[in-house]
Length: 618
Image (spheres, helix red, strand yellow):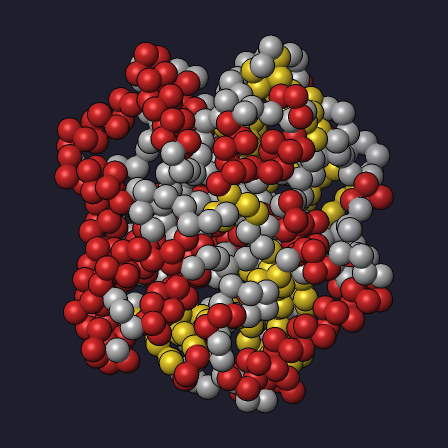
């Protein structure tokens, strides 16, 4: 792991703007980059760099380190990092009972950053604490040998210019940021057993035409199933999205949109697989619906909540998939910039070890270096297991969390392969995203059974050197499969499994793929655990059995007073839209609790008790 302490850096880095110039659009995409200390290339080549910040090629940064101060000097500088600012943040909110910060956010994933920026826009002072030296978490990036790799998914929902579910666009706009995007003409190209090939076109009618041509005898059922998805999506997309735990908002929405509210309440406890089986009979078509939902939730359709499925299966046509120019990492960079421009702070290399309670109320956090920060509220963007299993003492964990563990388990992690390949190995009309399951539908959810592939350079060629493409390959993998190995055996196993996955893609889609590889880096669940700070490398919760839709999924509040959760361990679950929605909801609920938004204590108590009771029914 990169050890920046050897460079005499402070224990954490504060980022703040020092000027508001007219070049804000440049700052959004390129200016908010991080640090590549000199003579660290060998370490970068040995690790999966999700969480390590490298500057973009076209920008020059010069680092000067000494024992007294750390300062970043940059051409057309838009920020600085100085010891006096670290001291300022250490003083502000550094005394028990201090109210200088309204909220501390643990982690800078998309959910945490959306919650932080939404609060900052409302006038709250927020401190975001990030363990690494870049924001973004699973939506971060790293650079190597001229390539810019997305750490996580390159399929970006919520980036359109219409509706209410374009939550990434809205979150950026709220802090004065806008990113250039490239529309993707298709969401994914499925390569499935029995040579079933289905391309999910951006245009809904084109997708339906292709799917019904594969299953002409199921045309009526296909139309009915997806029409239900649209019914749910349209109801959600028509509403102003705020906290479902805030009764004043709920009453207002019900008064404005009673039919839509009742529609969502009706489908809340239902799953996509049950709805599909009302209209579809062909086993292969039902397996295709499983594959559709697996991309959404890493489980089959019977375990995928209907609301989650509808959000993704319809937004890909309504707003479409839009890739941000320069890579997915630009989203978190822009949100972080917007946060500090609104007067709040973000500290990097700030490893939170404990949440501090005072008479049962969360009042602050303690870092691994012993420093403490205090605020009115604490928001955890860590997984549910990390929050209640590591950051709180065992005796402080509320009984409510036992209900969560009864319904949900940790989803598996992934084996991730980043490739740089010669461009001529890909046909000119290659789709950006592919899902591969060659021989047996039963392998869909098994480790290494199905493969998800993204080629973002199909849309944005600037991410790779000339005449090169990026292939980012995912396949599910459990951390147990990587335990107890020697370093040598671990490396051999990585290479062996990666070789098998690449061979499958070569055979199914891209002949000659192996010989075209010029760069390769493999990450395992242990890699994701280490650099994304996610227990066992999990990508979120999944139901133990067939759930009652989203009924058992907790919202943002917890049974610890002053402590909130945000991200994929909260309603509505995994995915970019879902975690952004979680961030919006959390900010609204916190704002009401600290007096920025209106609230009704009596109604709050009644609603929260009702929601808690409903979760027990799951």
